[in-house]
Length: 163
Ligand code: HEC
Image 1 (cartoon, rainbow, N blue to C red):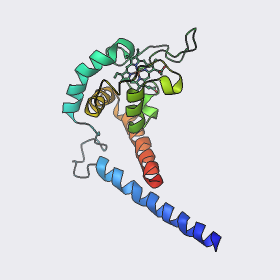
Image 2: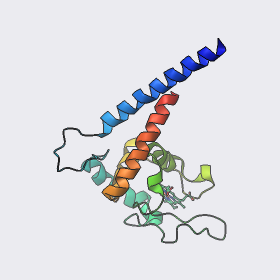
Image 3: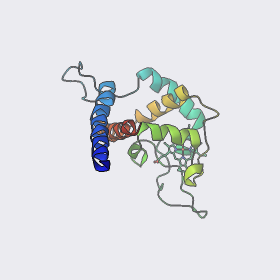
Image 4: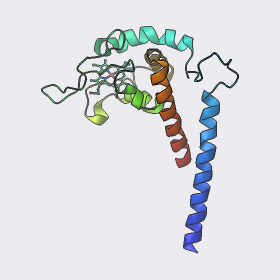
């Protein structure tokens, strides 16, 4: 009897997963786009990118540099064992993180992972953080964006099945 209940629960969870994948796709993919347009429509608008530029310059550029190129030697820790600000332009590691994680890095800073980046949750609101991330991601090539997008989709499907 116990076993049957678990089996039923597992089937329901699986079904929830499949449904979970429908929603984010509908949110992200523009099926009405002409064939010549890029397959993936980006999550942000040009207005967000423009709003993000001055906010990035003011809050992030001192460390991550004017064009998000960061520190060339971003993998080498300093004498205190801390990492320098990495590039955010798609050449380093930022594209490994889904959107929710990127938002949370900016809000909470590096402290949760023993890093040195300041937290911006008190200073910037969610729309401002999204605008900055839009500006950052506008530096990513279509290729990098596509890989990130697929990871982001997989992660939001995973989150939905846990709800
Ligand atoms: C005082 C320097 C500093 C400032 C200002 C700063 N950062 Fe950072 N940032 C870092 C460092 C250093 C790291 C590496 C992790 C750590 O040590 O906290 C990092 C990591 C990140 C990451 C994770 C990248 C990855 O490859 O995993 C993102 C995303 C990020 N920063 C975005 C921003 C944004 C957006 C702003 C502006 C709102 C900003 N940072 C402002 C220093 C800074």
